[in-house]
Image (cartoon, rainbow, N blue to C red; front, side, top):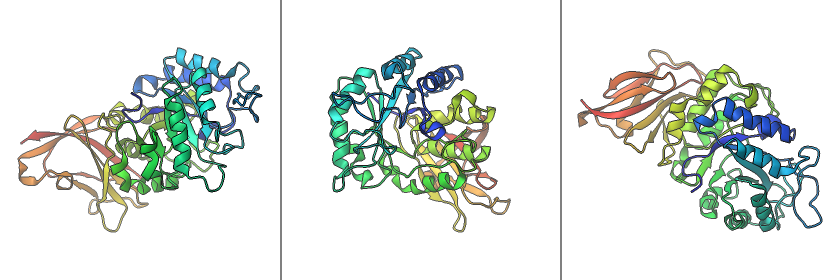
Amino acid sequence: MMAKTPPMGWNSWNGFMGNISDKLIMETADAMVESGLKDCGYEYIVMDDFWMAPERDENGRMVPDPEKFPNGVKAVADYVHSKGLKFGLYSCAGMLTCGSRPGSFQHEFVDAKTFAEWGVDFLKYDNCQKPDGIEDHLLYRRMAMALRNCGRDILFSACSWGEYGTLDWARNSGAHMWRSTGDIMDNWVSMRDIAMSQFEHSPYNAPYSFNDLDMLIVGLDGKSCVGLPGCTKEEYQTHFALWSLMSSPLMISCDIRNMSADTKEILMNKELIAINQDEEGRQGYAWKIHKDEDYYGIAKPLSNGDYAFGLFNLSDKDCNITNCLNLKFWDIGLPYGSGYGFEIRDVINHKDIGVRKEYITANLKAHECAVFRGKLVEI
């Protein structure tokens, strides 16, 4: 079964937009393995828009851009598969893609068959340039049906940006992951606003169908095609922690051929990844822990009885000793008189910090976070 846990991989868009080629994709597959990302669970290599030629062929089939992919898409998919990875493509529910290349509107079944013949394992399906008056859920149901009957397992990533009632129909349409936000940009405000907009959506996540908060911007460092100044290491760490606790798919978008040590440290944190990949697929629930500041707690029940919980200073002010962040265990279901506490591990700094009975505190600077895994113990 596909996507029992949130999908993990790499997508070309934020880092390269239309500047893709067979060389880039094959080098990225090499880097996925050689860097250790594959061993951490990242498995999909996804080519976004502009892989296709401007026109379909005489049989109505999509064809790859001959300059970018002179040996075709199947040759690239075969290379990715030879590395023990999975291969993904992009299309769109409209007549044209967002980049004005051929979309899949009214071609859903022939496109799904073509993708299957090429060895595609993942389809990102955008929502640009569709006819007026067409109901979006019907377009996504069409492609879902086509993929489910194409003769190959292809993960369906629905990218309708959280608009047009996405929450009401995305899971039922057959999507394995579904975008519930606008496009993320490589800056703090974009990432923070997306995360905060999703706090109320925790009831919608479940195994085999995940609320997609958009790609990871970790490692873009202001150099990406999406522009903007980038984030600090601490902001990227907060970003990765939020996506992990909220059970979002983890799709890297930086150039993994040239990652900094900080980028590797964040993206390859196996303890945070384990929280994201917990088999129950529960999105962490969030609550505000200071009435005047954007200080938040997030808690995520895990399948073995543990809890993951985090403290997030999403404000622009440092907290201090008289105004620090406190996560009270009462708020996640552990009363003081229960006779139990949490044996706690700091999963960002990878250290055990002992047993806590009532609460845990973090003195966080602006945009910083702390994330813990707690095992319930009798005390």
